[in-house]
Structures are given as C-alpha cells and as structure tokens.
Amino acid sequence: MIPLDLDAARKVLAAQPFSLLVGARVMVFEPGRAVLMLDIRDDLKQQNGFLHGGVLAYAADNAITFAAGTKLGPEVLTSGVTISYMRPASGAKLEAEATVTYAGRRQAVCRCDLIAISEDGARTLCAVAQGTVLAVG
Image 1 (cartoon, helix red, strand yellow):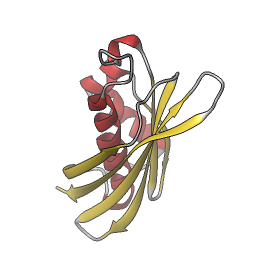
Image 2 (cartoon, rainbow, N blue to C red):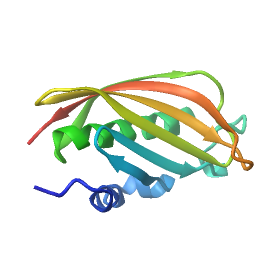
Image 3 (spheres, one colour):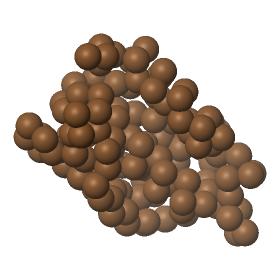
Image 4 (cartoon, rainbow, N blue to C red):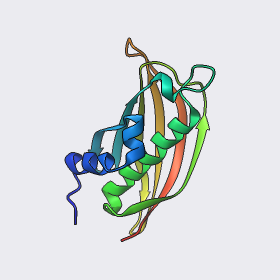
C-alpha cells in the first residue's frame, strides 16, 4: 500500500496530466482533509474575466477525492459531485479545501469550499461542493 502522506499525494497529482495543465498543487494532505491550490491565470478564465466554472469543478472534484483518500486509501474514484456557485472567482489564487464529513469502509462523503484569494490576501468564498468517493481496490 502507498503511504498516505503529503509527498505521496503530490506524486499522485503530478501523474495527472490535467492537473499539470491547470497548475494545481497539493498544499495540505492530512487525515480527513486536503487542500489544493492553483493560480488564477488568464488562460483559465471565461469570457467575462472570471475563473471558468469548469476549473472550480475540477478543483472541487480533485480536493474531495484527495480528502476521501486519507480515509479510504489511495485507490479511490469519484462517484458524484455537486457544486453551487455563489459568486464569480477572481483574484490571484484559488484554494479548494475539502473535508470528510462521513467515511465508511468503501465510501466517503466530503464537502469542499472554493475560495478565491486576491493579491492582498483577501479571501472570498465562491462555491461549495459535495462529493461521494468510492474505494475501488
């Protein structure tokens, strides 16, 4: 079994081509919690200058799966995610903080807060997601 620590989580993320494309980074990987971060770049924005909703959904999905992996082990897959967008995401960085709200032997349910961080460090909650993750090993 792969050790569940921050270095291992970063290696898993580095093996995901799409995560490399958007520049995602694992900042926190601890029991019941994972935090992903990415820079808000022009090529990730939609036509009105805000971070594209698909990028927020990606960040939520991946953070949720990493958080669930801290409880279920490394062999997990998302079985469903819902996201509610509350305000446009703009600024310098996006933080996706996922926490496990329930974990059984084969399934975990997680919540994820998506926070835009401005250049001066101001934090704005932009979206909230919930997801279900299944152990596949």
